[in-house]
Amino acid sequence: MSPTTTVSNLLERNQIYSQSHTAIPTVAEIKESGRSAFKTLIISCTDGRIMPEKFLNITVPEEVLIVRNSGARARPALANLVALDDMLNVENVLVIGHTDCGARNFNEGAIRARLMKRAPEYKDEIERMQFGKILGDIEHSVRDDVEFLKGSPLLREELKKNIQGFVFDVQTGKLKEII
Amino acid sequence: MSPTTTVSNLLERNQIYSQSHTAIPTVAEIKESGRSAFKTLIISCTDGRIMPEKFLNITVPEEVLIVRNSGARARPALANLVALDDMLNVENVLVIGHTDCGARNFNEGAIRARLMKRAPEYKDEIERMQFGKILGDIEHSVRDDVEFLKGSPLLREELKKNIQGFVFDVQTGKLKEII
Image (cartoon, rainbow over all chains, first blue to last red; front, top):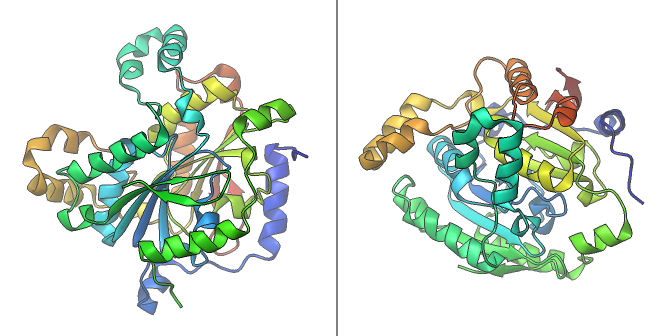
């Protein structure tokens, strides 16, 4: 059965959660401890069914950085990626698309037409907007996105050697290596 | 103790996870079932320590859509938000920043300078890049981002009534309502 997703219900759930919450180590505490943190960056999808922490069994939360956007696209993640790498020296990047991704179904023309009707004065911005649509199949999209990152002069050469692409299969729960 | 985060180790963890994976319902199956799905969109941070599914106790994964970018910023999430709303009729948007956010510490000038050294021919793109830096305190930033969304002519009027901003406290695990 679906739960009732009102904001007040979510806040009640948070209230209950907080009763057993253990303080999360601060960035300063992690640094002081000398342990490695935030070295693996994952690009994944907005789809709530897809939880990288779960299917990668991430038990130490500061192990990863997670960018989530529709379709798990690399281009809109680039600015975050370069800034996080600049601060944290990221070691691995995983682009993780998934089967049954709704971003295949975005009708960009129809979305733009509805936005134009809503806000015609924003024509230039609407035309520039990237919604994350998956063109072709997800494997092709992941490959294309990884190749984009590997080809970007904005990324550190050393990091580019450690960028890989995967597809998470919603049926089997398995990651398939694409590139 | 920190785990070893190599890609091969993550793939081993996925292999073990998949043995107890239950097939996730497809979008078509969810639609056929007639149950509500993907009505609440959360904008949260890339920081691995911050897991909205955990602190909101999301047990039905298709309950939510989650955008994650550095600083939980609204502007870079806008294109995803309008496209997802167009397809799914989103009912609630929660912008959730968090205490101890590393995006306060981005030195945008220094990042741009290093990128310019790396790829001077990308000057225009580098100048346009938004890294997600938090200006001022996180409460101010969340408020500003929610006000940006509420003021955007690109969003559906009905949806704008249901956009709220929160700060997740890493010490207490509690969400504080900001706006």
